[in-house]
Length: 122
Image (cartoon, rainbow, N blue to C red; front, side):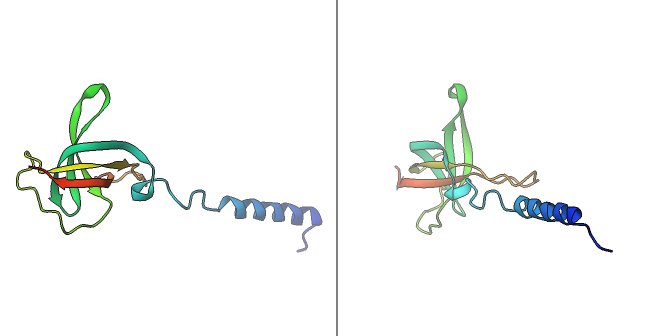
């Protein structure tokens, strides 16, 4: 079976379109520790829960306050677990990073938090 030059042209165009459409759109996603900052906090009380996670009090729209669980962007073995999370014993400043979304999941993935300063409070 011999293809006409017209059919060969259409097949070549189709292959070129497929080759360019398969290119990865964003190889460096803008999320997680390397992503953009969604919120900055300064000098807030926090509880260290272990496993590089903190409990932070944050404010949302209309000045409503809530606590959120975050994973810090670095691994530290110098922080001590807060004995009572109702009495935070750290003062932190840092940046809440844009969350990565890879589709629906049944597992809650906490946002990432880049610490700019942390000190033990009283």
